[in-house]
Amino acid sequence: MTVLSVNVNKIAVLRNSRGGAEPDVVRAARACLDAGAHGITVHPRPDARHIRDYDVYALAELAHARGVEFNIEGNPFAPPRAGYPGMLELCRQTRPAQATLVPDGDDQLTSDHGFDFQRDADTLRPRIAELRELGCRISVFADADRDGIERAAELGAQRVELYTGPYAEAFAAGDAGAALAAFADAARRAQAAGLGVNAGHDLSQANLGAFLRAVPDVLEVSIGHALIGEALYDGLDATVRGYLAVIAGAR
Image (cartoon, rainbow, N blue to C red; front, top):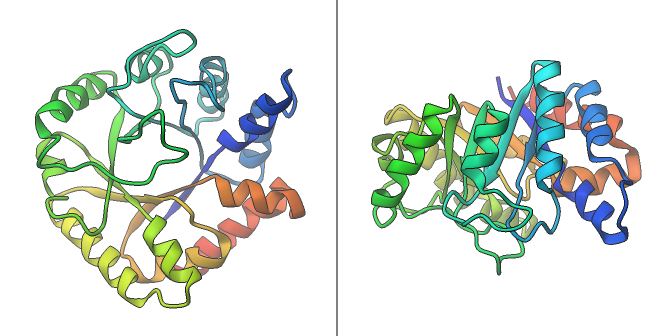
């Protein structure tokens, strides 16, 4: 069964644009869980443009109390700075169920590519080992069209998260067939190497069903931008339930 983890970064963006504590990120996460979401995802960045360290601690407490998955995404190589203790330290303090490693930089508006598992192997392997010692399941961001996705298993990762931006673009253009075939092939190659498959980025209620029907055995989708945008019109409860209905219909 595919589970839904809601990324609440965009709630923090709105809060930070005005300052203060509203809208409340924890309250929003609680509403998503009340509607049936299976977990909460955050992607804190060193520049604290949205989710901040205190959000991570509060959301971890909520997730642990509810018995749901807490997923921290981030660049494992970004150095600590004021207000950002680093991904490893955040995971040490909160013990998320899953740590998703993403090769993003300060100058990126959003994540837009996966790791090169050939080039990045020597630096990724020890960082994955450190995070696994904390009890985190490790997922690594991966491009469907890049060779070597199988190497993620050799490095100690347990899952890959397929970067679905190219699929979403193809779907919006009305011709997603080739993209779906590429993602299905990448999923099968990863699974043959013993890796679980997650997916995320620009997935929406419109394109999620087709993706799940074409790509085998997706364990988790992490969705934030589209879900929060849709919730502006329909509310968090109805929107989360809408995603759960899409997932159920794609089985």
